[in-house]
Length: 350
Image (tube, rainbow, N blue to C red):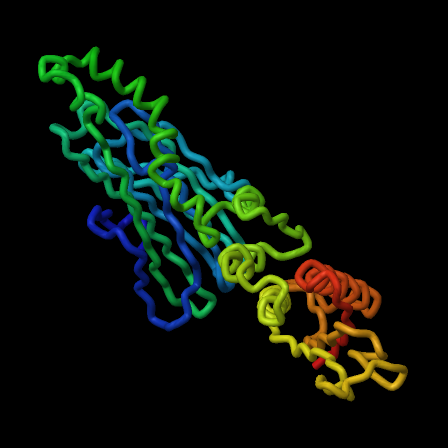
């Protein structure tokens, strides 16, 4: 059975997999560039196929639901010779790409279908859902056929939202509807930013480019040597860190955020000074470490530096990265410790 022989459906909206084995041969993503559109506007359906094991052949079928007029396609460069087949099924379309060739593990292909919302789609003020599906038929080296599919939904709004703010006499006027939609297209991006502004203020969700801006709200300058994940965790903890700034607990928390390991901080106090009426200061009194008052030692047990998703490091690169890590740790201690104190840093590898 080929994809061209299957009948498309418009009720499947989540990823599914008909398989003979537990191993999934491909991963499929199917999205639309816009989830809310008006009649006459264009929409692009993008399907990404990630091959997770060697295949002997592969086919992709994309359902274009009724309400969309297909304007064009985009085929991956490796499949330019594979002209997609377009089948008219009812008022919708079914587009099939077929790769009758071996496909190696790790291959990523992206397919696109460009369409336009048909005029007159939908009626009334309720959005009309248009469901598009993508189905991959993968032929494995063992001779098995695996079907993996997913879907996406486009909500078609038959009329502009701003019409409801006008007197009822204008709501049936097509010219007025188009003029109002023109203003809506200008203001909708601003409305979306205002509606979703709480996401921008959340360190877990805000875009990486806005992290320095968000940090400036707390008068914090982010160290670009920190990874994005560590910067986000630092921003989430900044209030509690400011409350503990200058204390041992605050320094411990800051170092743990950066290194992922809890440090051991030992404060050195006077060894032989007893306060009282007989207390005397002199050469025999030892304050702190090395007779220097207000001293402490930070001991950290850290694993060797390893570059993520990269080949093993050379000894020279590892020493360079470990020296950079030590400089960052020292800068953290300098910024968090009381100004009148001195410290000793010990880094032990585990």
